Length: 98
Image (cartoon, rainbow, N blue to C red; front, side):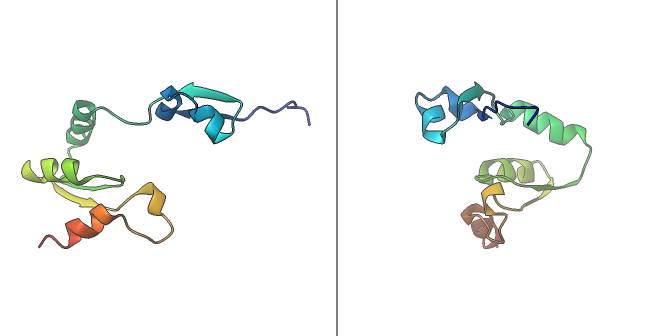
């Protein structure tokens, strides 16, 4: 009660698209990308010094292939959207490449 009136908002790169806030049904929208840039992501992974990496993303095949070519043991887990026991098509395809 002490925080009323309440206002629902959404922060995402999708907020750059006209009408997205309205379609989401929120009062406020903030543009904030939740994606790392390619070079920054590669650098962050390399800086860990890890020889084995497990990653989760919806469409990871390009990054997985790139890192595998560089000698990294990388395993895709699938998509955040598939946490309910489902696996993304990308992860399934990569499992069947051998």
